[in-house]
Image: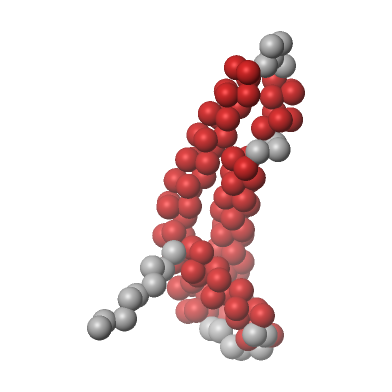
Length: 121
């Protein structure tokens, strides 16, 4: 039987990078060349579209939750609605996705810098 191939997505790439850190592979400054950093940044950049769509869906779910909470309040106050929303799983999912995208964007910036340094710029 053919072996099932794992989908290469942002989670997979980030997981592999994390393993590299945990295995101390990143401690050797020469373990990865400029091509590695550029290739990884390119792949993560391609994955950003999918991750941003996940963020938009999470944001939509969060807005639906806000609306739901607002409608149940006898005297709706938006500051109270926002406070209550921040206790929901929808808010947590939104924030986790938001931070994930920010981390990917930062990794891409750092990778570009590593390529510049490795290239002598």
